[in-house]
Length: 168
Image 1 (cartoon, rainbow, N blue to C red):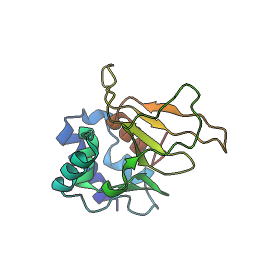
Image 2: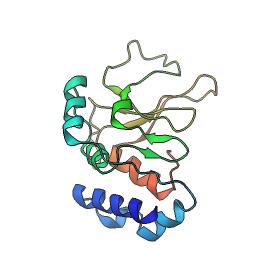
Image 3: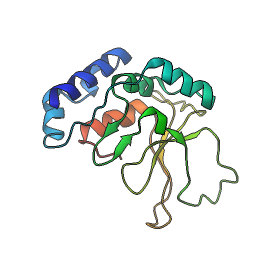
Image 4: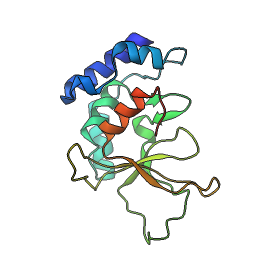
């Protein structure tokens, strides 16, 4: 398992031009994911990704597109990243008092625990290293509020890898 994950993460980092010092090393990945089932899946066909983007009217973040080609999803005790066909419009699980209408650009990225992990495909974070923000949906039953957990898919995914699959 370790070498498959290590290889895919290495190709992901290299293809995006991410500074390798920001990514966990092969030894760190092996240690953090030891004893867990392989989180990777066969990659998605790039034409399927283009079809998804045409159908939904939004382009996926480059880091997510690249990961989906390498591994169509990422599973650690649940789908941290859904396979492409399961990435869809966000379903709110918590009330957002300030929100009158949910933007159609909010998509569920994964559903690892009680809260879903989502991405806003129309907003681009202006800060250095920013991209499409990653946020949780919140959950009224547990009393958790929606919140931004990363300024981009790349920042979120690197943090997830550093922590052995903890999504936030």
